[in-house]
Length: 347
Length: 292
Image 1 (spheres, rainbow over the protein chains, first blue to last red):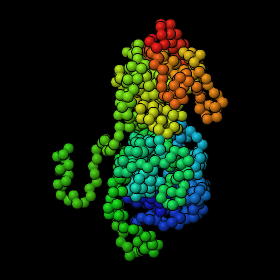
Image 2: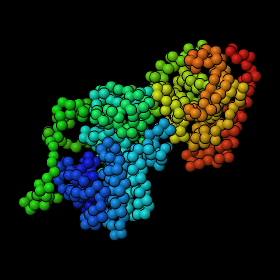
Image 3: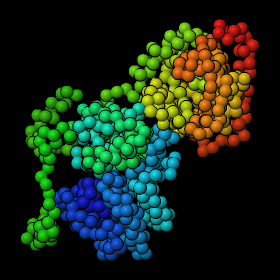
Image 4: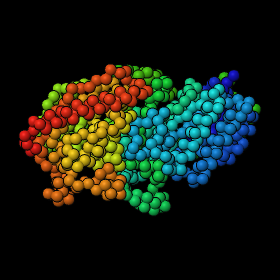
């Protein structure tokens, strides 16, 4: 019998791309995608279900579709995308509902993969150069997104303890750069001049978006339990990141930084959430060797991911968005999936 | 390689996107622009720093080494030294000396407070400074087999009054011994004479230090003599003598979860006593603070 997979956050970059990748896997029989908004990329056989922010219908979906694998990608790690309250609702309450559904008695779920972020390690001057998975952050989280992610990981740890028959995988992704994804980091690098904090030149680590999707597919297929950092090899100074993108660094004063950035953020010129400002001071490094030891091969180093992003940016500058815009239409999608008129390729 | 690539390009039907057959172990493209390593150290910056610092080392402090051959030329080792002067002058002298004589990099481990200071933190990092975190030390020593320099006295060494010169403070909680044990590397003690007189502290304000969160706020003889600005930059030309003691090896297996605390404390105390004894001996032989 083939696998039955549920993906949360289908309309986000992560969920959508992951669904596309899984559609190629002949071992997966059914893919159900959940989100509050309609998918933004074209999917062949993924079934989209619209849910509210905190996934209250999740228990019903799990029961009805009998999924054995849940890929939880709908954790917001970019705090500029949502208000603090909405983020708490999505991350903490959403995950709670998801885990409650997965852990209900008689639940068919045997594997849960959760996409977290290396934000859980924080970024302070007291940090070691490299964080390993079992190490904890040096200071209590001070930003909303970090607090919510730390809480989510706590729930997941409890869930794993209470459900030893379920394979629980927690993946912590470093700053993602790539052709499609938009993050505070990529937005900062897309500006005519890159903001940096005067007197600091932190060492940054990146992971390419293809490696992100490949690593999620890898842990799902290999059924690896445990916590994994996902980040490219090496770290490079922020100034070098800017020069790889062909930009210059514009220094922001190191004191009263908020006073300078707040009006610019108000005008929509700059988007620097507090966790990004901390990163621009102290940087962060995570040890990626556990996933490598498990057999995963990265295609990009940190510098390689930046270089690749810079090339994508050049292309976009010249030809604009090369991909045709996709609009989800329920009737069209239903037709392609379920109409007897559609000839489906025999497997 | 070139022939192979040509073949692929001429393969008929290559309009179809063929899956790339990549060999299992292939070096990833790493398009770096600078030589800043994973610790933030840049050999270019370091070379520049050495060029600027060399006259100071040679003609101002006139540093002289004894037993430099005891520092291993390959493999990891934890260098341990006494710490002195309001703005420690010993760390750059030791790093400069070893790098120019042995041609191997030395990573100077210091309080993470440095990292928080703009410009200073970046410069410090580019010229070989690493935050003194046990994880950092382990990675440097065990996995990368580098030389790391620590001052077990911490800020208590440079923060002491001139009347206490050359009296070693407590060696923390012996953490440096535990790291060396875990990393399976020897400890090489170094004793330095001269740093104490290069910027002696004549008065300390504990209240002010507490108020601004610094480990100590000193008034130095240099400030009294040269004024507050020049006094924080200019060292007295004390003669530097450095002596490398015999490396200390521990017959314990590396990579243990923990080590006997009493053993760690005993070893730390033995090293402290050996260094104190060496300092007294060097001072007995010293004829002049300025000429050695």
